[in-house]
Amino acid sequence: MGGTRSLLTRATRVLPFFYAAIAIVIVWQIVVTLTHPEPSILPPPAAVAATLGHLLANGELGIDTAYSLGRVISAWLLSALVAVPLGLVMGSSQSVERIINPFVELLRPISPLAWIPLAILWFGIGEPGKVFVVFIGAFFPILLNTIAGARGIDRSLLHAGQVFGCNTRLRLFRCVVVPASMPAIVIGLRVGFGTGWAAIIAAELVAAQNGLGYLIANGMDVLRADEVLVGMIAIGILGFLFDTFFRYLQSRFGYGG
Amino acid sequence: MASAGSTGKPLRINGLIKTYATRSGEVLPALGPVSVDVEAGEFLVIVGPSGCGKTTLLHLLAGFLKPTGGQMLVGGESIAGPSVDRSVVFQSYALFPWLSVLDNVQFGLRHRQLSKGQRREIALRFLRLVGLQDFADRGIDELSGGMKQRVAIARAFAVDPSILLMDEPFGALDALTRRFLQRELLRIWEEQRRTVVFITHSVTEALFLADRILVMSSRPGQIKAEWRVTTPRPRDITSGELVDLERQIYLLLDEELAKTFAQEGKSAHE
Picture 1 (cartoon, rainbow over the protein chains, first blue to last red):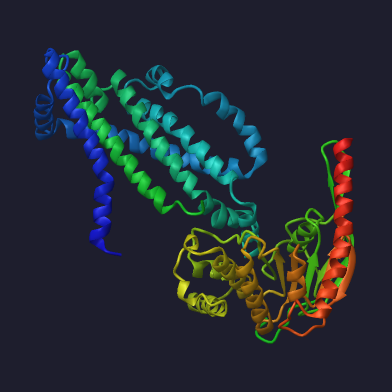
Picture 2: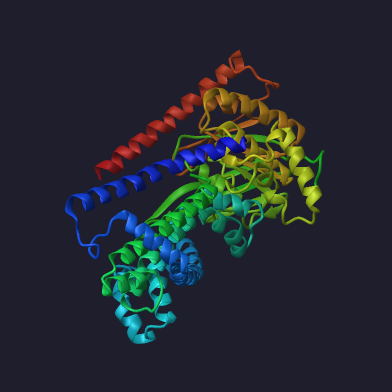
């Protein structure tokens, strides 16, 4: 249980990502040195770092990040609030599944991005439209994983629950079905957050006055490739951090493989 | 609430039948009719070829399935559904991996009128009984198969059942662990006397454990023969009389197995 040891192993796990980041910057620099592109097309890493520092210092990047994160987190939570209970019920009741599954299968292939135009028509360019798009993006991964989790529960676990005191359906649901589905739910939440994060950037590219997607779109409009790149870097790093956080949750709830 | 000194309740099975309807509307007999009387505190072992319906019988007794016909009475009361009064030890352990070892053993005590401390005390007592008191706070995934089944046995005894149903509990374990746990089970059973219905396909296991052995026929499962084993425990299964009994049981099982294969061959040709 050595604290230093676990810190060390954690550091070694992060190291490959660090190397990859450095390699990307090196390749980028080589391309710039060899081809001398216009800074408005591809600025050198140092210039983007300077812009990053500037946008961090004047708070612009922080505000855009906060907008994007706020939208994603609220929509993703809303999505989980609907998809997790629905998935649990669909996964444990064949008759409910038979009724709802056709709706799911018909709507699922429609990319959340394809909903953006409708979202703008229905909700305008305000917050509800963006929350709607992320909701759709996060919904299906959460729902499908939750269904798979609830359906895949070992029958004998349900039997054990019934024998040892869960004598109502609700009790069995609470004491066995929900915890037994937890690993799959966490996977769904993780994948759903990823698709939601991609969807919000797309929605902000199309219609927003703030957020990281807007930062990128605006950078393009004013020919500031450095701002575009700063936005992209922020999206990448934040997405990575959230995924890492969910992986940690997954390892905590990863019981019963 | 029953306590030390209680020996469980008698079980009466009378004309029990289970059939399944196939999609084409055909009626497939799976079990029965089966009639057995099990005394309070008796260790009954049922041996049969795989697919003979012995698990169906156990699931009926546990209340997971509803019988098509017949009666099942525990101490005179009809079986209506799953209950802690008929606790089960599963072949796949069926422990809850999101709970600690202690919480697994406590799980069946939660709906009783007991204080937290009392529940904990009972659970620890039964963990001590299976020799796992030092593992109370461990996770289930940290345990070996043999340890998991000991936790499951503790969980099954802790709820103070009238009857203990055991569905090939040692079937997934290696031979040595199996041998060890058979001894452990007898030791615990001698201390916490309960009516036991134990299902296995191992004749050796039946000879080592049982007060009485029932042999089931191939589908639809019926009681083909029964033997009372009076050899005192602990038993040496290489002793003359048990070897002799083993031979008789195998003779019967071979016959049943031949029938099963013949049936399978026939349905394959249809």
